Amino acid sequence: MAADTVPHLVDRGGRRYPCDEPRWRGDDGSPLMTQPLPGITRDAIDTSVNSQWRYRAALPLPEIDPVSLGEGRTPLLPRTLAGLHVTVKPESMNPTGSFKDRGSSVLISALRAQGIRRLLEDSSGNGGSSIAAYCAAAGLEARIIAPAATSPSKIVQSRLHGAGVDLVPGSRQDVADEAVRRSDSVFYASHNWHPQFLQGVKLIAYEIWEDLGFTAPSAVLVPAGAGSLVLGCALGFAELRRAGEIDRVPRILISQPEHCCPLVRALTSGADEVDARTWPTTLAEGTAIAQPVRDREVLRAIRDSGGAATSVAETDLLPAVNELARTGLLVEPTSAQVLPALRQFREAGQVTESDTVVLVLTGSGLKAAQTLSRLLAE
Image 1 (cartoon, rainbow, N blue to C red):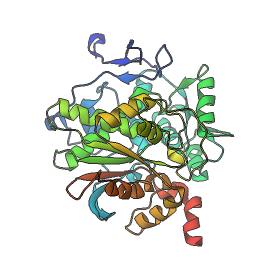
Image 2 (tube, rainbow, N blue to C red):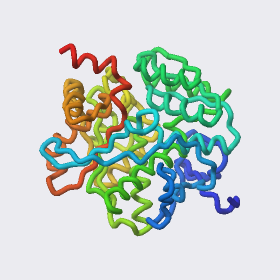
Image 3 (cartoon, one colour):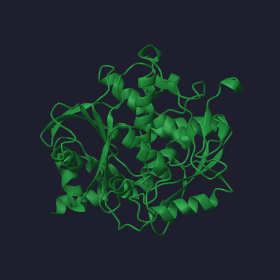
């Protein structure tokens, strides 16, 4: 791709950087976003590819050689939940058991093409095991930093893929801070910081659109920690609207656990960024992000979509896991929180029987088997 046709990355100060250079943040220390892209029409879908790479024409670097494990193409399943007819998207069907594979595939593909051979990632579990798997497929060396309290099965998965794993005492935020400190000596391929990760996650919007008969749902309900699913949906559906394929974007509804809900607090108070504070631990470890790197962008995306946010009581998490499991869907507590959130959104009148609602179930319950065994002991 010629240099003058490569899309740019933009930091919060408005400075632009070439998208095809290995860079994880702006010179001002702020997170980077890819400049708005035109999106693609249904004619640009490569239907011969049975993975999310069927939408590669929508990527800023569509010519890179994919590192793929068959991610994406997870189904939309009809369910009656909270008295509503909805569809659920079980992202546990991705190769490593979570939606993170969408971003990892595109991120690792880009970094390999840019000559990166060693990288660092920080994660509460799913992101780390995903990056580890895609590094293994790409022949790259990975070092994962994770909280000491991370579910053991997620750590085992990362190590089996050949990644080095360092367990750090303290909170998820402590782990992120440690990763930034180490970034001077090894390339920091953070799924929370790197803009190419979001480019992979956005393809979930294209997939939902195609599977709904090339239409957009009324609302998408996702658990939110760092907010990559929020931004992925916002980016993907905005591109589809830009391309003339849909006439409106869905409302983005988010759920966070009461024990860690900085985005909910900020939205409720009208703030443009989250406040710094300490939160108690939560079973929904995948959303235990006290200070999301892209908080401003996530909050803006929810508001711009006409969306909303709610927090879920810790005591509702395991019952929600059990309720979903009785419909055949085994998910971790992080994912299950969308069920009580759906009830709350319905009670508040933010979703009704006339809405087409997609619930994204982000990760497999097999990732939290030790925690979920408590359901059988009760």
